[in-house]
Amino acid sequence: MICGLERVSFRYHGRSANALTDVDLEVGEGTHVALVGPNGAGKSTILRLLTGVLTPDVGTASVFGRQAQSWKRRDMARQVAVVSQGGEADVPISVRELVSMGRHPYVSPWSALGREDHAAVDACLESVDLAELAACDVRELSGGELQRARLARALVQEPRLLLLDEPTAHLDLGHEARFMELVRQYMATQAVTVVAVTHHLNVSARFADRMVLLASGRVLKEGRPDEVLTPSFLEAAFDWPVDVVDLGNLGRHAIAGTRGSPRVEP
Amino acid sequence: MSAGPAVFSAGAWLDAVRGDPGPAGTILWRVRLPRVVTGALTGGMLAVSGVVFQALLRNPLAEPYLLGVSSGAALGAVSALALGLSASAYFALPLAALFGALLAIGVVFEVARVGGRLDTRVLLLAGVVVSAFFSACVLLILTFVRADTLRSAFFWTLGSLSGASWGMIAAMLTYSVPALLVLFGLSRHLNALTLGEETAAYLGTETEAVKRLAFLLASLLAAAAVSVAGVIGFIGLVVPHAVRLSGVRDHRALTPLSFVAGACALVLADAAARTVAAPMEVPIGVITAFLGVPMFLILLRRAVRS
Image (cartoon, rainbow over all chains, first blue to last red; front, top):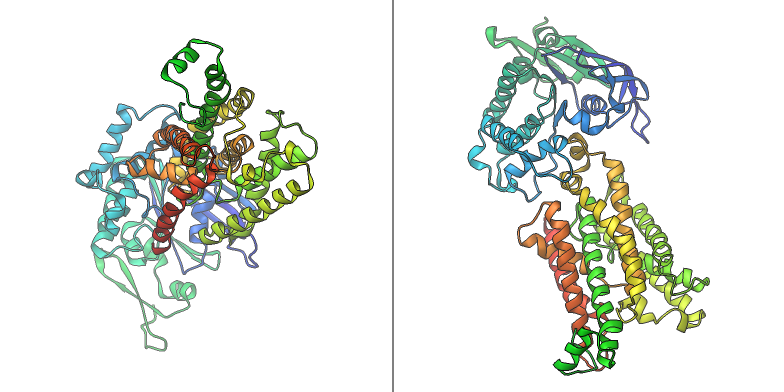
């Protein structure tokens, strides 16, 4: 197991309800696990528990066999990288500088980046197709380019575990597919495990190996995408009628219905 | 060095530099040189303090004067002096000032924290109000205590380098050199923090520890500066901004360059303070405010618009 939660409950300070209740999660090596579910289901909370920035109230969150919150940040940053939704779009630095920050856990405070660090940065810029924009100001990038730059920064950390927090939330269909394809390519060449939080059920059904459906802080269903994408589970999670169509080798697709519309029972 | 009410010929200056104990020598070694060195150190420390606050708060408007840190430090120093600490206790005074500075920043943060985040506008407003309150406390103490032991109200509200001495410089160096070296060592972490605290943590920064240490050291720099030169505003705002305008963003360069630029800026401002209305001396805080306020307003407009 690469990382996981064991009977974890967590409540944010000052809230009356648990963000997560009694959650078990196991992520196996080399898999791409998608965490899906409605807003407020606790998906992002799981990622933050795995990175150790939050500590479970009950149970344990572990990464590579160690409690997540007991890691030194520098040690964890050499093993685990995170791509989040936003934050640095307004910082006046170049794409290359942003990506170079990914070498932060590898360099000492006093020294400059070495030749290997620069080579890693170059390789990652190349792999996300941003080599030509390396000198460009981050603030001038499009949404898709910025997310690719963030992905490059995460890959420069040479992670064994990559955590994605709604990385394609603001991207159009083409940029989203491109981003997910880059992640898949990286998984094919490096021994990396991916845990991705997403609202895009159909995209994750195509790219993920496993899906975890959460609702109200609990795991409703865990399994292969075709096991999770069923009208009954999705309706229970999203509290809305859902149709699921089978597109053969494209997998299953979930489509929101309308309240009271006639539907085919599974 | 040659600017000031006492005017000497070039020959007298040369003799003084060679060690001739005439009036020019006394003024050079006992008055003007310590004053220039104090100005340089104070300016550098205030500028670095500004750089660090700006990185930690992710806000280009943060600086010790506007955050209330400087007037908190002034209150700490004045209280200690009023309670009997001798004005020549160079090493204790910055610590008393640090206590006041931390009190000020604590109050300002508590007011400006909305749902775990620091709201920029509330932060600045709270800084100004807390600053006004602490300045009032300083003036109150000055009213009741014999002013000759405490220096003037001008000194504590608008700053002056006129009291500079070698003893003060030694104390300032004792506090500022370690603080500056540690802050310089934190440069990569400060770079990471400009991307946001959570991102910095994912990149390997022990966010809470780094923040706490950097806040403490930036407050110490401001406190040490205030305890020797009084409250001088805007250096921590103008200087880092000017250095950034030249394209420097990396704190490994930004911090030392801001120190040097801050040193030059305050020495020049002091020269101006001594000469524009010679033989009278304009409070140095007036000069820095004339330069700093327009720049603050421009930055504020830009910050509010985005």
